[in-house]
Length: 256
Figure (cartoon, helix red, strand yellow):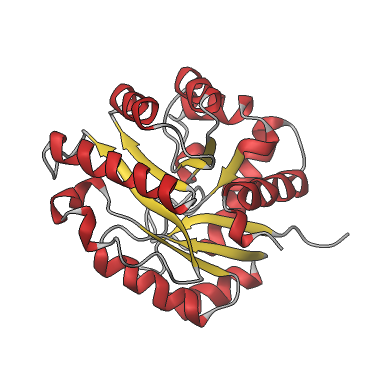
């Protein structure tokens, strides 16, 4: 039997905390069977860095976005970056009411503007939401949900998961799902249909067990997938195939 092929749907390869740097991380990921990685922009600088890394490696793609922490920068700082052939989505963008690094009204406007950009450009939307589910859903409904909408690092429970799925969204689970206290997230991972299920590392953050507390990297995404396989009572090969297929649906430009 051939080894599973995995997709890391959300990582930050330019981050200097990635062990060994981007080139070593890509090499280690490929050795672990992770053939596709999506490196995500959070502002103008990290979006440019994501594009530069995506240019260097086959199987690595970039997004361009303005994170809610950086919403005060203004969406105009990223709006000229979407023409590159390796840019496959808008985001990460959304709302973060836990840290409130940008005022909430500024976060909401930047999120709405990026939803409009996704519609205008015909691109998927990558959402970050923390302690802001109701406001996130309200803005999505007001602006219209893009055809491909990904709830990255999903941290809700079954109720939030059901709403995301009813809106047509994809759920992307990070290493948090492996934590013992993450029972609500685990319940959401059980109920998510195969065709909406994705996995990610959010490297260098949120390393899964047994690597919790270490800097994360895309090579660790099989640990997330294997944990979800055990939760769902299926093989890791089943989860690898399903999550890679879902990533191709969520990000059509990466499909073979």
